[in-house]
Length: 409
Image (cartoon, rainbow, N blue to C red; front, side):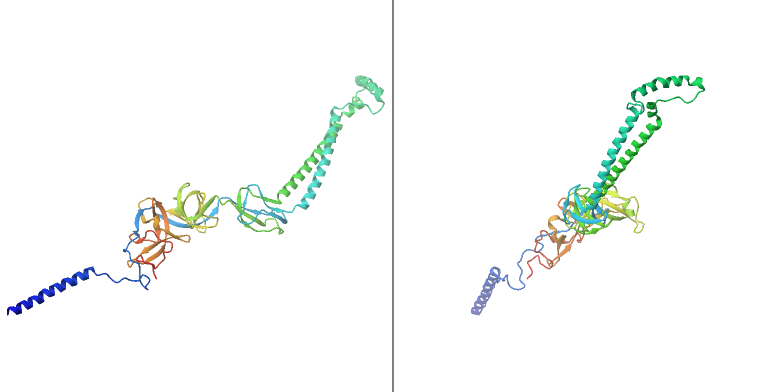
């Protein structure tokens, strides 16, 4: 019986020892390596690694309004006279200096008439000078009798006063005048003055004709009123144009405005000089309200508002943009909006985007509408909700469907 007990005790001790060996081997065994190039395999790293949570930040209560960018200074040059185009300053996009000729028309016919007008002016100047000399002679020149010479003139000077003195005793009558006195008569002087004034009028008429031709010559050239860029060219060299036909559109691309149509109830809350956040194609800037039209559009019941974009903005005339207008009665800092660090925002083309991570670790690209920036954080006006998690530093190759645990096969 004692032998049976020792035999059972031996089996019990052996079982305990075997269990301990199995436990020791299980705790120190290594799993079989997984080939990283096998289908469906992922390079492992901790979940939620490299992500950041969408937070909230105070932001003004604003509504978005679409508008378009326009040049603050623009002009459409049109033909002022018929003719053939002989010169154009350049192609679209080329800069033009202030006062430079942009388009020129042929002026051969006007030049011929111009030379003829100068010849007429020279003739009128000579006639005017001669009439002036004749008038001076009538007024201040020496007088001699046309009959009898100096002797007869002396006789007239002696006899005429004596005759006039005796005239009352002989029954009266008009006084006698010498021939020299008759040459100083008002009628002779008036005739000389009238001839001189006629020549002066002819001279002024000739000068006016030349001034008119100068104006016609200026109308043959279109000049840039300020430094600008050719936006649109409507004609080419050799084209025949008529008065009023568009030639070239010019604009100053360095001074741009955003033109928006705001509802009348929103426009009443805007002020000149107020800064508005504006979303351009690939940038967000602050534009200052520079003009508010005094009346509303009768068809749309909107008020036109212009906001000056800062110099160097990534914009061009005709570009679409969004302005964020404070809501009537709002505009305070009581409202909140989702926010992200600027490092979590990636640009795909010209659009800002973020990569949201779902519970399975798969990312989804969201297009964002950005708002105001405060330090390192940027308000997200649309595209994200507070509490969502996004990739903190998205790589350029990251795309929707990728996993935070590794690249998709």
